[in-house]
Amino acid sequence: MVKDGTFFLQVFALESSDLGSRVTHKLIEANNLQDKVHVVQGSEEDLEAALIDKKVAMVIAEPYYTSSLLPWHSLYFWYVCTRLRPKLHEGAVVLPAQASLVGVAMEFEDLWKLRAPVGTVEGFDISVMDQMVKDHSNQTDERVEPHPLWEYPGVGVSDPVTLLNFDLTQPVPTENMVASGEIPFTCSGSCNAVALWMNYDLLGDGRHTVSTGPRAPYTGGSPQWDPHIRQGVFFMEEPVQVSPDSRLVYRVTFSPKDGQMDFWFDVKGNQSNIRDQ
Image 1: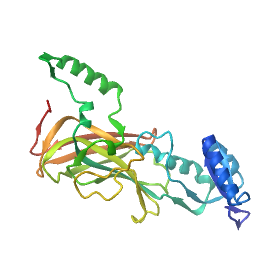
Image 2 (image 1 turned 135 degrees about the vertical axis):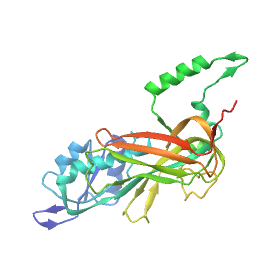
Image 3 (image 1 turned 45 degrees about the horizontal axis):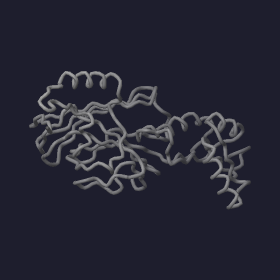
Image 4 (image 1 turned 135 degrees about the horizontal axis):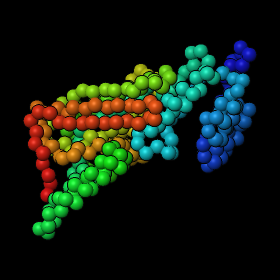
């Protein structure tokens, strides 16, 4: 902290839950840090009030929020930092400094069937019902669903690709962030989904990264997914048979106004739609 031109160490910990606040208080007491660490229970408004006459030299977060369903929901940290910018000292450090949205084309054994049409059952054609369910889902459901992917067998059919980058040391932009490109497939198989996750780079140097996707660098086969967080899954409308001659075309839009991500994926090249009966 900086006050009246003098630097002195003070730590303000923002805790939104009563349980988290109590645990933090116990840690502070156990380490005799009552005069150094102060717990602010509540919202960003309460933190701003606690910092009314102070300047902040460093902002640190995991970042993780219990209300997050999809990995990029924790970009809320970016909004908190932006709100606190008037309180930041010149040259203040923000950790993590960078974040990136990453995706990999997947061939899941069974998970994709959650959105797959049923077709014919015991000789009955229920394609009309399939279409009704699809139309309703397109109108009401999120295009990307959160799933703990360590529970679902599947292999990657492309390399992981960074789709969007976020500079957390700068204010949240006012205009949409849009990225598009193509991802080559690395093997032949069925592409029925795209797995999505966030990487958080502590120092922005690429050497200190926390991933909400694979626990280890992905080099092919079945990713070793982090079992403690859910990843995002975009389901293709139909499984597509792909080869190294095919490409996954994407367009991703991040709306700073509401923090929403919009995804579009398609396959170009030699491919065919397939359905597992």
